[in-house]
Image 1 (cartoon, rainbow, N blue to C red):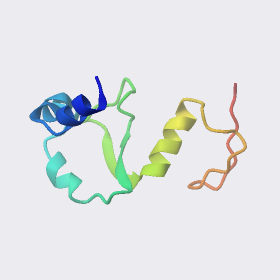
Image 2: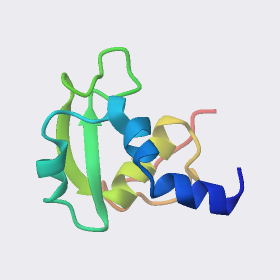
Image 3: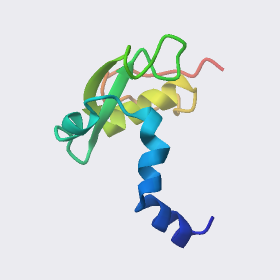
Length: 94
């Protein structure tokens, strides 16, 4: 798929179809509370066995924190980088 095809798809109703299974009943109202540098953090994580859109707790969080946490969980954060949110040094166990 080229950029133009992707762009057309992203602006079509097919985008809503794609995300249909990733939205909870109140998602439209909840989205109004977000600024451009925020997203929802879910716990238990949606990729965990215990996690789901309905069972997990949702919390508004800065995008950089959610992204950094995902990197930590998957072992990709530079081990010498000081984490902004927690003020601790993180070490890669591998």
